[in-house]
Length: 120
Image (cartoon, rainbow, N blue to C red; front, side, top):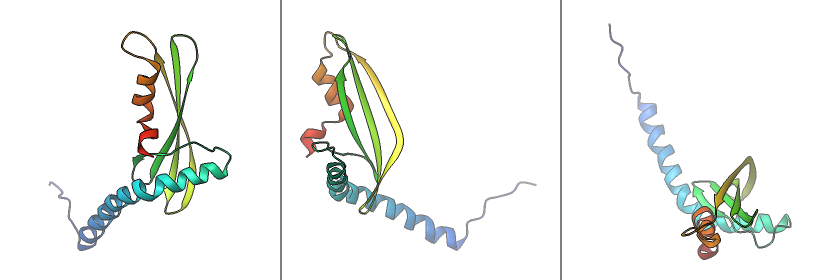
């Protein structure tokens, strides 16, 4: 006998509510979260570091440095924003890129750091 998934009224009420909170959180994170995380970073002696929006309640910061004449390394650190409270997530992504024809240092910065300096 084949079992069928049964929807309950509770699920039909809770699921749209969670989706609405997630979608509303996206706009609030873009508007308020980037500023509050940047202020939180400034209080932690990381002045001049700007947070960029990744997903609802998730922001990131990035640094790029020249490793050698042809290698650039980009590090991204992620933060969870909960309406004022900021938590640093223990996740650090590292990207290694080669600098060459058609791929300059500034091109790598634009692609990897999502133009954080233009969003500010």
